[in-house]
Length: 578
Image 1 (cartoon, one colour):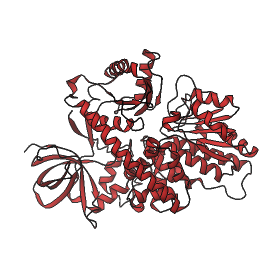
Image 2 (cartoon, helix red, strand yellow):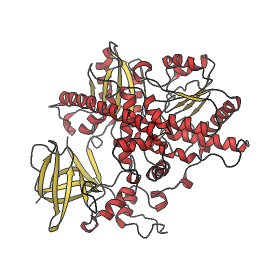
Image 3 (cartoon, rainbow, N blue to C red):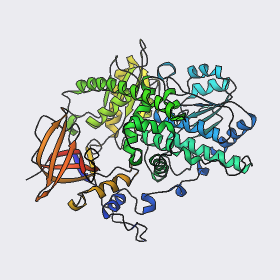
Image 4 (cartoon, rainbow, N blue to C red):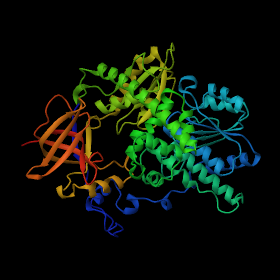
């Protein structure tokens, strides 16, 4: 597979009204404009710009259901999920409901190996002993027909808060809040599960305030935005203007040291610094530690960490999560090695005729297959599905799918399901990620059907791995001031990509680090006095780098050397013409 660099359109249509701060560099203005943010208000949205909850279908009914439950003193049980979005959504729900005056609030979370995904009938039976009267699902529920029916049979009310795409039939919940419901007019369809729950709390607070339930000012729900930021970034939903508003506000809380004790403990065990925390730190360091609990152990550990207010106890939870994450890395490394061995010798060039990758091993862990699918997708730039047995001795497989831009993976699974009824036991998800289950004996049929579906939907252009660059960086701008401005100019993430530049450099020095990484010393052609340090993680291929290379890179502060030092983090390099 080959990768190509393509420069973004410079997008000259900057707002002539000039709301840009005078100190903002032309380079950062260019970066914002290339992402469609032609004014500073769009580039850096603040909380007053947050979309109001009114347009969310079912939001008022959800607020009434919760307000009535609180008035009657009913036992509300929040049912979480076993990923970071689900864990943060659960913590937001429990904390928020208690802040607003709910007296009986508990939570439960499925165990991946025991209950399967979401609100299943098996989980409902385990909840009976808790004697719930109202269930609130977070980050799931839209596909949990059987579990919701079982809960209703017990006489419980069910409020579904979710962001996944619904199927043709909706479950029999009392109320559903999901921005992707048919007929929902909420302008942002990109809310994560934690964002949906936060909006439900906003509507509930308004209803309680209008009913005169507060003495004085109502509780400040913005204190929950640290959790909203972490869950939103972790779930890789597009960072549209509304999500950037939520994430930026949460980041400000964390950087100021005002986040919850559990998140600050996770920052510490991740060896990050709160004042300079970035979305990359959340996505690559904090979120994996929360996710690890749901992958290998019990997500209740992660949720307890997020609910803990005692810094010492929170640190203990965070250290346990750190240890589980280390174990997860070992399991993942072995599984990715297995996957790469299975793909060795296969070509994924445009003319290879391969549109997908679908892998299975009987000794893989079902909690880690999503990470394997993600790694393989990145390596070969193809939609990838990885399967593992749902549990020991079972012929039911659990699969996780990851997609590439332009290929809606949940819609693709729906197309396979429509063409081959009964082949897929169940599925759900969104554009870039999905989960499914099927029988081991049906795996060959699924592989064929999925490949045919993708081949029909994917154009050769979509199968080309393209690196979008913000163009060249002026050599005089390559300094600590620019590096800090780029770092702090986000939040960057899905749909609002971190700035990436490309230039031709001369390689004047290089060495191998840790057997697989490459340390480079670079100069711009003709500017020998300005030498740059660069690191290419995983960049050692067994061949020396070309002396003249075109390099796609990010400019970052060099925390290792400190001071005013900067480094280029290489994303891609290729030989350049002399």
